[in-house]
Image (tube, rainbow, N blue to C red):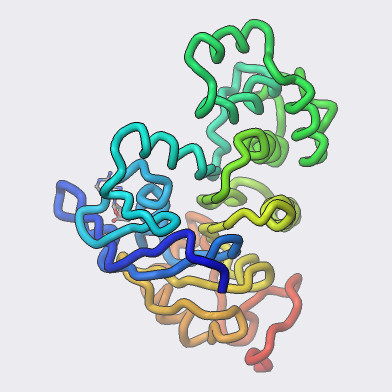
Length: 277
Ligand code: ADP
């Protein structure tokens, strides 16, 4: 395995109201690895990502980033470390009334001073880079479009273009395709994976869709009740593991798919070993 980029050792996060959102998670993620996290709503996946992108301090355990205990980082080292991590959310987190070019160039905010950032809002700095990033995500013609006039899928592409400008070592994608239709979801997952693979970035993705996770990721981490009941290759994810992971928690109103042993992966996905029935 590649040298670890993340080492999580008994990580815990208990919120002030007593909720143990992350309850003893130990994992090692190699640099350049692609990992999917699956599990029911409320399992703790987002909280884990917030710890991993260094915006939330764990209440227990240790997190090492590139061999360094993040608890030892001072404010400026923490800020630098955060620029190495790009997070993409379900709703892109873009400023709707700004033109696309500005949202893409916001990928520079971690390295720009405040005056430069403001100046760039008037006269965008690095337009050619933004244009190249949009070409890579397939919407070069949207450079000067108003962001809130784009479709959900196009907005996710803008968010990915912003990541390209940020050029982080690690991409954390938190339900990046939950608001787009299924065919587009595959395109966006594949796009993120290709971009990560091309430059050796580590990619961790929270996914509602078990189908997508199993079909596209070499490593599947199940999360439930703040813990990790399994961490295996997709062909080792049995219907029993999935049943236990989602037991009593299926929430179809929120779009979490139902699955069963007969059709665990949906019709669109290639069959995987171990699921003949
Ligand atoms: P997931 O991303 O798997 O849906 P979350 O990490 O969002 O799960 O939530 C895990 C648990 O932590 C849930 O019970 C949720 O209600 C709780 N939680 C998340 N954020 C907070 C917070 N800021 N304050 C209190 N409880 C929270």
